[in-house]
Image (cartoon, rainbow, N blue to C red; front, side, top):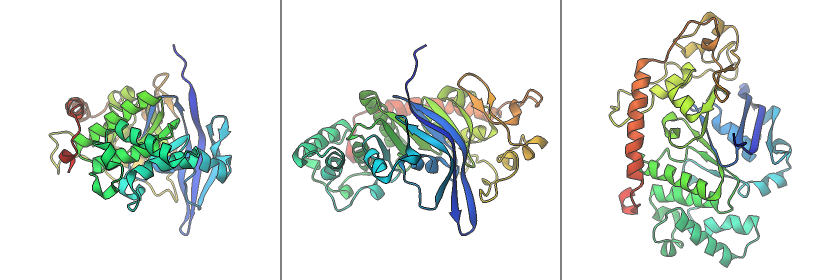
Length: 363
């Protein structure tokens, strides 16, 4: 078996936020790694800890964040112990981020060519003319139509899908080793979303970058990720290959995420949701944090936190349902049907995404 080169390792990461209301235990003993050239998806509801985890990698957490323990190793250096100067040199050059809303990360007063070129001038000291030339090539690479003329346009002159391509171009311009994509397609319709996801996979193949893809929608990662980490209440509760998580999930929370995926024939008012709400992390519950929302919870779920049970060499889940003495429980039948429908939908979108991009179709 071909060995994989590990380029990032997060180990036992525990982060608290000091607030007026008390200490929020936002990230609790999170561990994962990232291999060269792969896509790792981190999936979970809002507030599950996805963004806090990845902002720690970028050195972007708020000033009231307190790293209680853990490490984030990148090239044998712990990012958590880097100086501000070292992090600034790394951010955008070796590790870059694509944010959810391009209009909040693009400067409305600056031409997009200059915004794409700026990381080259900052991190590599490149002269403006050369940087602008490379910016033009990157615009073409990410599929911005009529790039020679549009390089002097402003963000508001582009559609949502094209603005997201600009943000991707800015993130890729220095050919970073790791891209963190934080909900990069949430604001786009499904066809443009499919085009952006396809673009990211194509660019990843060309420059051999690794991607950490953050999303609340497990369906988005079906054709995008190599491995998936499912997060709930500041912890990873299931980890495996994309096929293991998508087609053989073991944690009831993962079942809930799968069941809430929209399909082409889903009516607006018929999309199932996970009952209840995530716990208050000012005072996390004893035992399994998902127990109050888990229809299959047992007495032990309210008393002891489950360890990770091994499903395969690549698949682990933290649920007492995998204990040898637990009753046998299978995913609800509707999840199997939804997986089938979603796979069909993904195939249709993949065909649609192959069509040439015309910006007027996005408007």
